[in-house]
Length: 126
Ligand code: SF4
Image (cartoon, rainbow, N blue to C red; front, top):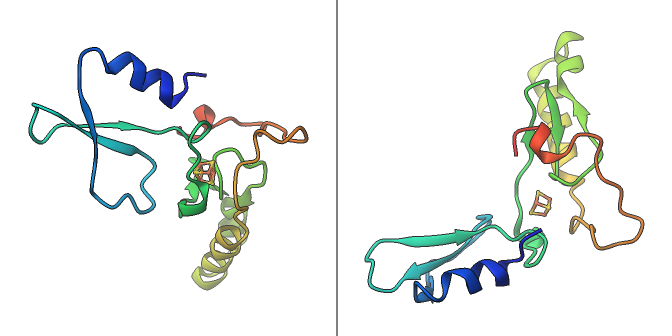
């Protein structure tokens, strides 16, 4: 793993990065303005070393119809099976909503009990 601090340290001899005053909201990347390069930003997604899970509003629908409410989560909701089972749009939406409302406050990867999902994020589209 490469930490956000290491990335910033690598860039600092070449570039002066200034805090981006734009409100980040739920965006995954923390951004900086590059001094001397108008309109240029650098973004770092540091979900491990600078976690932003508290602001995350994402769910992921995989190519095989599974909803994951966190890239590091192990639980998946099988929308494909529900669709093939003939469930209507309201039921599908309800399944997706329940998955979203079940988001945990964080990925907990620094917890000793953390287990990697069987399909890592690289296997479900990053
Ligand atoms: S680890 Fe999970 S909850 Fe945290 S930002 Fe990534 S997808 Fe969202």
